[in-house]
Image 1 (cartoon, rainbow, N blue to C red):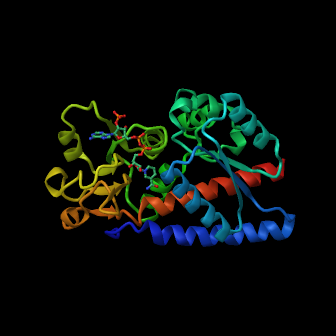
Image 2: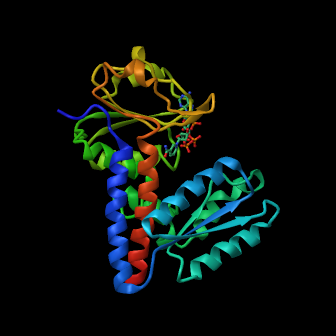
Length: 286
Ligand SMILES: NC(=O)c1ccc[n+]([C@@H]2O[C@H](COP(=O)([O-])OP(=O)(O)OC[C@H]3O[C@@H](n4cnc5c(N)ncnc54)[C@H](OP(=O)(O)O)[C@@H]3O)[C@@H](O)[C@H]2O)c1
């Protein structure tokens, strides 16, 4: 019997406290703390908020962090140079380039990500790290999928032989999850805005991962009884954060569900910091 509420907040707190202990022990031995550098281009308020949350958690866990806030009028070359500087700064172990970039940089997003040293790519978006995942190597994977899989495994949700339906095909969520679920012998269906008859796919899911950012998109009438739902998408409704699933509506018939907020969000932050710690360990060993 699995628990019905997949409480990501509680699990993330436990993982964070374990990580804090490991960081303290390493610091006592080496005198070096992990350090995360976040690059923010422009002043998008949502991006600023996400970076603040990440940096606050860094501080709680004993990870140093710096914010490099660049003016949106800088040139591509200046941004490339900044990334190179951080690559060669041996005191920096992890680099995140906050996405989305401002409009004029968007077509070059992949080129910027490719400039990040793969060892410091704590978002798991560098082509080398994406390629490793293709071979089921999960050494560096994006934090959200890692958080989702960990949440399911922690609550003993069986994945082998299950039909997983994912509504999202982004690099940060849906695509990495394909390989992570396949590795665990699930059968995977990926849906997106061009999927025909989305409802019939949703209805067949044993495990449903929804990451579209549309409040109350999933309701009781759309799902199969006993389905396990991971609610990833976030949107703001009347000043409150909402998930993609109408929680109170589906609760009686689901097998289990991750609340939103309080599910995938805290797990994501936790695994970003876990990725930073792993990057630090790899680099101080070299
Ligand atoms: N809680 C967390 O920690 C966390 C972490 C990451 C993301 N998120 C949230 O998850 C959501 C997705 O993030 P993202 O970065 O992956 O965004 P994204 O790149 O915009 O991807 C959204 C995906 O959803 C699909 N989609 C959107 N509306 C749909 C619809 N009505 N029917 C079927 N498919 C639909 C899109 O299809 P197309 O590809 O066809 O456009 C796309 O694949 C956002 O709300 C974000 O805030 C939360």
